[in-house]
Image (cartoon, rainbow, N blue to C red; front, side, top):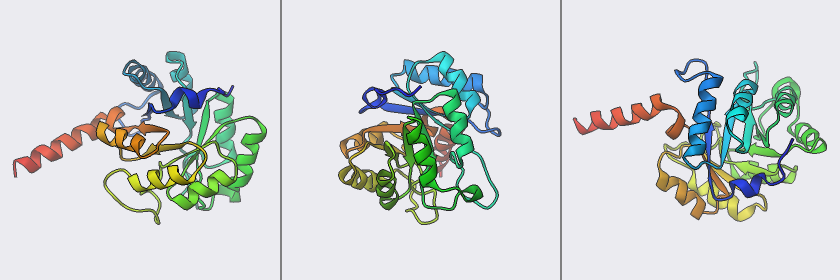
Length: 230
């Protein structure tokens, strides 16, 4: 069931991405559900989550809006965030407020077309978050009917800017050009960066690794300590 008020609930707030892959120490639905609960206690307004199992567990722990996705690799395609209609249907079955999917113009598995996948979701009343890497992709996603865009993939496609920090320019440009909400996501490590995104026009901000991946948080501290010691 899609929440009509999902955008009201997340406006100008922090969405926490609670994800762990199989090789990570916090992998497991029970762990991700607890992470989501901790995020809610800290004031998060929404959760971004991967896999049907994690989403189901998180829904038992919190009533926050959920942005759902499924990361799945297919041979012959670089698209792995909710790449096909199969993943969309799985997410709609478990129930999420927004389905997040790669909305780049790259070739999708099995020759599926982005436009057809979006049309299917629109026909079934499912709200859609478009993960994009450039302004052009954001504008195109809006033109085919998505409900919001997220800058998730900036720096993760071969043709988008490579930088160590957030893509402030993309958020600013997209917010000024699009009529739908622009969600800032990607390489947001500091609270000051999140607040800057909102000042630049972001509707909400998604933060993941800086909150929910302790091994990466530790690495950043260790790197700084080593640099300080010469």
